[in-house]
Amino acid sequence: MDTALLSVEAVSVVLPTPRGPLKAVDAVDLSLAPGRTLGVVGESGCGKTMLSRAILQLLPKRAKLDGRVMFNGRDLAALQPEALRRLRGPELAVVFQDPMTSLNPVLTIGTQLVETMQAHLGLDSAAAAKRGAELLAEVGIPAPEQRLRQYPHQLSGGMRQRVAIAIALSCEPKLLIADEPTTALDVTVQAQILDLLAREQRRRHMAMIIITHDLGVVAGRTDEVAVMYAGRVVERAPTPQLFAHMRMPYTEALLAAIPKLDAPPHTTLPAIAGRPPDPTRPLPGCSFAPRCRYADDRCQGAKPPLADPERAGALYACWHPL
Amino acid sequence: MTALLSIENLTVEYAIGGKTLSAVSGVSLQVGRGETLGLVGESGCGKSTLGRAVLQLRRPTAGKVTFDGTELTGIDGEAMRRMRRRLQLIFQDPIASLNPRRCVGDIVAEPLIIAGIKDKAERAARVREVLTAVGLDADLVTGRLPHEFSGGQCQRISIARALILEPQFVICDEPVSALDVSIRAQILNLLEDMKRRYGLTLLFIAHDLAVVKAVSDRIAVMYLGKLCEVAPSEQLFRRPAHPYTALLLEAIPVPDPTVRPAANLVVGEPPSPLDPPSGCRFRTRCPRADARCASEVPKLREINAGQFVACHHPLTN
Image (cartoon, rainbow over all chains, first blue to last red):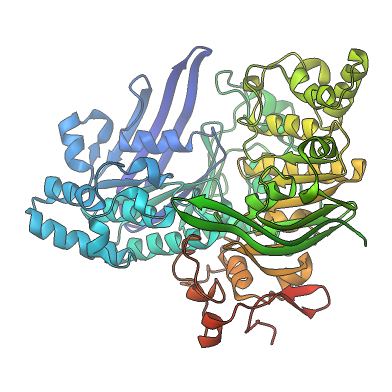
């Protein structure tokens, strides 16, 4: 494996709330090599988006970050705002869930695409406009020259997400973070956008993190998967290994709760009882223990570390692995 | 199976900026007593409008809706209001569909008040019964406000409100698409339980085919206001006849890395419903389209027992 492009070391994010401090991300370690794709999977409130914000240094002002985010040998958490600004675009880029709110509604597609390239690549306006049209064509937008003059509301949701991807790719980033890039889209458009991201990732040898709640999205399109629950990574393994042998009961339950296409109608789904714990009231033991059918006293009392006791390349945080 | 609900040639149009948008055009469907009919399609295909038109929340431009022998499209507002005791609706966003300023007990009791049940003790008893049925602790929840609950719990409250008048027919409009996977399974199981317990007939509207299959006896697929295919769920999944159905099935991300995602299986996005293509509305994205598809609107016809398809070149041929 190549040396890591990104390494997240013991990152925690704490947000102050009226109910007390909320630990959104709890001591997460991750690493990603150039050209590799990592899927981060979890349900709402598990901390996956806060983790991506911590990597991008886009946390809310009142959030407190601990740990290091090493990117290409530099600790992003220690960089000055100006140095960070220069990194975003040519090094780090992001595609958000909702392309309507991530694009500026009062600027044309062209302005938004071109301003990024002018700022970071020093292109003059004619060269940037030409490159903008090429980029739109690359992400599968027909009649790109006309689209440059249009506003976001004149485009469909899928087209807007293609524009957001074109902007993210415009400065040839080394790492692209896609935060629920297809959740707001229809299923046929979702498939196209995921194909597009995978194609561009391979072509550019770019590292990519796909953040999603859908195990189906990561299964066919990532090299490695990290499953998050209540702020922690609870299982991390190469994708084929994870799906072949899930060790953490939460991952297994999450997969089982997805309706199977080959199951007959009216099959009772193995639902996970209860819901995640209140993040302002952390549990002393395993956060999943109250919902886990294998849980015992040990799980209630002590937090299992994320480890690879069998040295099989698969990490999990569980006292009673499957 | 006798039809509890029968929709004939239903058309719903909206006037938008001097143009006419046919959200639903000429749809005919029947839902049998005790059946769950799934209605699938992408955003803007008209599936929610169809659900609303059935309940007369949006009066159809043309066509008939008959419920248990009564033609809903012909009756006046007062008669429809009485009819609504028997037809209920569950919405997508469980938090937005509950009044944030009213306590859960009042929200769930409201349909009883509208239905004229004046005895307070009786109302309280029925609220307690239905909250218990949907898996909530009535003592703990009745006095609290919606914001104190999670999305899954709010959806349970919405379901309790829809069931308190013991309706015969419930339209579920994307009831689980705002919920997390683990909570979604709980709510789908609850809907199945409630269906058995109250003997319900359901119209289950969703964009997710896997979710729809989990609860539906038959599935209807809609595209740009028209039905493409109607078939028993198993048949639809095993042998889809309409190219659009096949496309929807292939596009579902499968949580199994040994199943490679079908590459480049579809081009483009649905055209604007303001300016639908001539002939078959799917033809602009269909790999099988030819000149006939542009000139002639395909009729919904039965190609196998119970399987209807509106296509000139169905896949099973």
